[in-house]
Structures are given as C-alpha cells and as structure tokens.
Picture 1 (tube, one colour):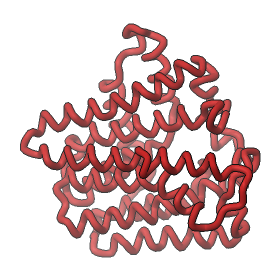
Picture 2 (cartoon, helix red, strand yellow):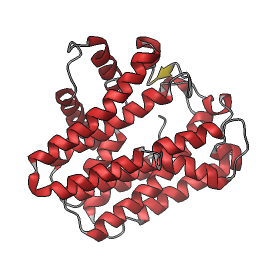
Picture 3 (cartoon, helix red, strand yellow):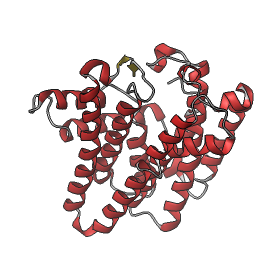
Picture 4 (tube, helix red, strand yellow):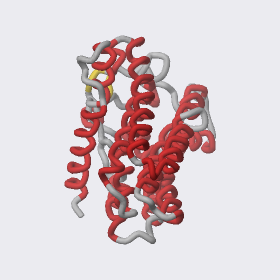
Length: 296
C-alpha cells in the first residue's frame, strides 16, 4: 500500500468536495466568504477528513457517502485554527506558511469567519443526513458526538484549561486533559464518524475509537516535539511558540528522548488496536507510523 498515493488521492477528493460545499468568495458579504475560503484552502494535511474516510473504508463503507461529513470535520478544524491564532489566544501571525486570518482580514472578520465555518459544518452534516433519511439515527449520533468533541467538554474546554495553564507548572494529568480535549477529541470523533457511516459493527467502532485515542495522543506528542525540533519553513509556522507562551509540553515535562519514547509507545498502541482488521486497516496503521517521522 502506497501511503503517499493514497493521501494524494483522498486529499484531491476532499479539496474538490470542499470547493463545492463552501460559498463562493464573491458571495455577499464578500469579505466574510473570502475569509472563510482563505483559511480552508490555505493548505494542510487534511488529517481529520482522511481519518474519517479511512475508517469508513476499513469497515467496507462507501467513500462517497462519508465525504460530506469528512469535509465538515475539516471545516470545524479550520474554525478552531482561526480562533486559536487570534491575539486573545495564541496571537500567531503565520499559519501553514501564510499570514493568519486576522492579520489579513482583521480580528472581527476572523472571529466571524470562524463562527460561520462552525455553523456551516453542521449545515453540511444535516443536509447529508436528509439525503440519507434511512440513516437518520447515524447522522444524529454523529452530530451529537461532534458537538461534544468541540464543545465545553472537548476542544473548547481544553483550550480554556490551556490558557489557564500558561505561565504555570502543570502535572501530567492536566497536560493529558488539554491534549485529549484540544486535539484528541476531534481526531477520535473523525474515526467514529467514518465507522458509523460505513455501518461498522459495535466492536469495529470500539476498536477504531480506541485507535483514535492513541493516535490523538501520538499526534500531540509529536506536535510538541516539532515545536522544539522542527523546521519553521516545513511547518509553515514559527517554532518555539510553546516556550514563548510558557506552555507545559511533553518535552518540558519529560525531556526530548523520553518524549520520543512516549510517542512511539502511543503509535504502537494505536496499531495494536487494529489487530482484528486485515488489510483494510493498513492505511490507518501506516498513518499512525507516519507520525513518528513527520516533519509538519
């Protein structure tokens, strides 16, 4: 299985679908829709939608049916990046090698663009559910799961604790809560959404959710490492921002070498969670192993 070819193919499908789903940038009010498209199409790995599609394929579901929900997950992720970059949050000026949304469009428009993207994502899922009325319970469960993953018990809650923890020494339990909420929750929900859309069994869904928990942990640990060891040009954003904002990270708590060991352990656990899947799980296995060598 050629992972690079798989990623190129799925990224192409995701890009095409996103272009169909987002309002054209010349739609009134133009500045809002231009700001929305600016961040959605600024690049990125499209990890969350790819995980959704790969989970759907792992349970032998329909790729085409999963695409709208997969793209909605990417739109939600983009909203979170716009808001994370704001002066009141991380105050970053670069994202994916380009000026951040508020630098280009102003702070107010960036906030509203993020709000509009979050709202659009649920519109997309609702419309997809109406087209598959026989699966309405599946779509309702997906909406519930995503709402929890990005709300006060997930991503937003993690961001609040992250802000409260700046300039403080925190313990491992707090660091895990931040990572599991800010990053892991949406990754895990992306996999569950794909598995549900593919009509996976309860056991298959459980295993893919477990895989997602370990994958989210591995992703965040390697993200912490890249902030210390990464190349700003390859990352598309400044390195050292965690230290600048005096945030606790895995390297700060454990040192570089121990953090690398923890990343490898999380990846191994993710792969182990897929032990009951045959070749249909190879993409997910390769994606987990790729985290250990990624440069952005």
